[in-house]
Amino acid sequence: MAAPAEPAPAEPAPAVPPRSSPAPADAAPLHPAPSHPAPSPSGPAARRGMLIILSSPSGAGKSSLARRLMAWDPSIRFSVSATTRPPRPGEAEGREYFFRSKDAFSAMVAAGEMLEHAEVFGNLYGTPRGPVLEAMAEGRDTLFDIDWQGGQQIRNSDLARDVVSIFVLPPSIAELGRRLTARGQDSAEVIAGRMARARDEISHWAEYDYVLVNRDLDAAAAALVTIVSAERLRRDRQPGLVAHVRALNAEFEEMFR
Image (cartoon, rainbow, N blue to C red; front, side):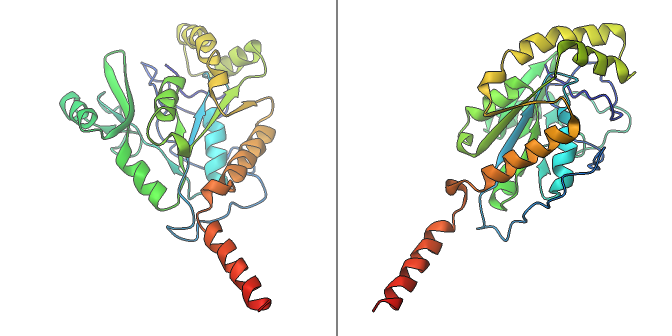
């Protein structure tokens, strides 16, 4: 399944590619973030938080785009997955992953506490519902850096109306391979495996609401910010609009008495 990959950031190469990316250790952008600031939620009733799904084949740039988006709006919460695999050196509970035993993970699934989950090479990965629902109630968006399978489950969940999904494509397959090689982190065998998976991953591009071709990181980041900004302004995501229009009508009635 998909694992994060990007030519510039230094990310440890996993022995087994996870189905979702670990949380970025640093949200600082690789290049300047878009100049216009993100609007801040004015309270729990301002709007319901969105679920922003970002998917791509390894090397297309979704991890760098995720960092750019969170640098533009630090209130965005990065979704931290739960997993049954043991922690690797340097990983911390609740930062890269929530580490759970298989029994505890299965109990969470049975109780409906996982928004999506999958098994990858004998390890279970999933998204706990609780932190996502809390962020939504606070009017905060949650960013998911996950593969197409995880994205598909979330889009088919009871939170589907809150989902905004974006797929990131590389400018060419040759460039995808160049980026994976340029990182200097993976063996030729691992790179070949990522390239082999890329074709299947790319075949799911049409399932997403938006598609970005990442020819240039600055331009792709600006487009991503535009998508999120526009989605936040959708009529059905502004719960205060009905009350506002009623107040305007009340002013009209008072004016023309």
